[in-house]
Image (cartoon, rainbow, N blue to C red; front, top):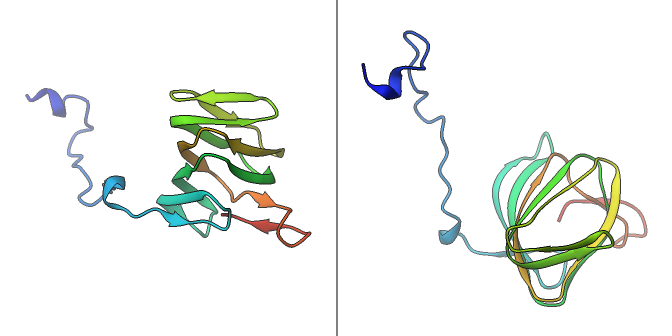
Length: 133
């Protein structure tokens, strides 16, 4: 018996089309509503508010004060990002608690992988709440 089938339940077969392969290097960076911040959306379920994306922050980029209604996860692929709690460098991972507030900036520029369960809630644009990038 082949080692790749040893831990499969009997008669179970791979789901054809169940793995979606994304090639971020072939995607264009899209502008966001924030100056010096671009995005590549890798996965999105708009109905649930879920998104996994790459964010590129040019040197001097600033993401204004916002709330995370659910857990946010960020992995710094290059450069650095910072908020009131610290600075994250290449290879660092940050997760933010549901209900937490912060703003973000990058003096050096950065590319991060971000995973959202719900869109961020921003307060700056309309003097009220607005969601997402």
